Image 1 (cartoon, helix red, strand yellow):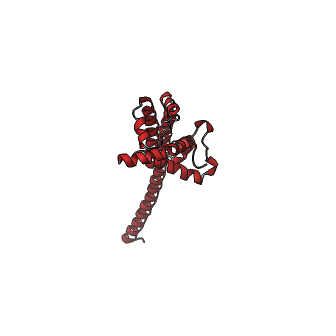
Image 2: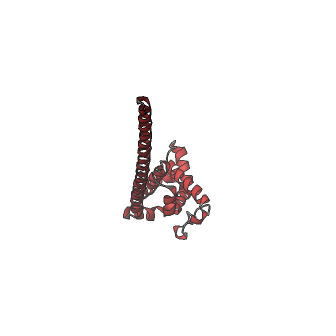
Image 3: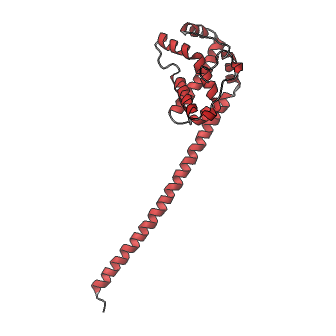
Length: 188
């Protein structure tokens, strides 16, 4: 005959087994939900990056940016004095500021990992390299003369990131078009 104590032990064993099975199912469901949540977050991040990238792309081909580009590539500067002269010419200053601050903003986005350097490199690596190498000496001189160490520091950062990325991905290397004139990149 089965005594009361044996029934109690069996009931305890069954209860523990049922609890363990319930716990395993609950863990499995929670893990699956976490995977789905992470996947949704990744897709959301990719969508946001794509939206941000398209905004940058649209700005790049806006009428104002194209006019600034057209004006800026005719500007020749060698030092901080030349930049002071540029700042006295409204059209040239607007072109300089439009172009430089655009790249400065992209540099911040890359530094903060909001935009992938791969995307930036595919879209505008040649333009950034052209800008920095054409005006690097002027920018550095202006930083020194005006004691303005952060002037276009994010453009310089972006330039360095692009150069590093391109050195790791030589098949994506882009040369500067000859029609851009004297500001041809120092390194090809």
